[in-house]
Length: 314
Image (cartoon, rainbow, N blue to C red; front, side, top):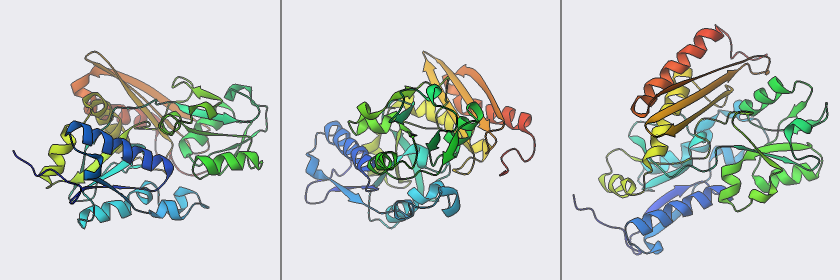
């Protein structure tokens, strides 16, 4: 199929949030598309769209609607034809796309680990009892309280610079970010340490950039196919199937990680009570092509062990 290539006069429009990390991810997408199709960077236009999640930064996500707050306005712009594709941090995306949109392209996955940031100590395990820890992630909060119930957790939202200022102002003694985001911003050196998945399993899709398009846009499909990273897509098929089967959102503490070794996929999953009082974890190892089925199976295993009301607020 012959597709009409974009030009500087009629550029391919890339929708994104306006945070430094979101812009870094959009620029990475533009560079990959330009190189893959031998086009000038000017043939791609980055369109910044402010989302509800960006506008409301003083309240927990669970109080204002969850993950869709970082995607809704961008998806509406795409459905209206104002942009051609949308670049997202995949961990911020709901598992279901709006009718008419699809998620079929992932860039190569970055570091999946959580970053620990502290002015006082290099490692999470070294925190004294009673230390105030800042995070807006229910998953991180529940994992932290499950392992260290002697710590105090406070709400902590904002971009990297905002969170660093909150640390300097004494709002909390330490916090967490994703190593992937710090790497993409060239700020990996601000992390006191990286937390291995065996200590704190990351969020589903952490470290991945997902690119959304209209289902009926053949040109966008062809252009994105050239930059899609197959192994990342295989890992995300398992992780997002796991999340979907759990009914996961920003309101439920869920962690999951798929890793590939040759033709084998290892999927680890964890669900936690929202107060951290209980954690249920397990894993499956399957052929790579069975990843999505493994995600659904692992979710059912954990739900069966959890019983009714496991995610209820306490």
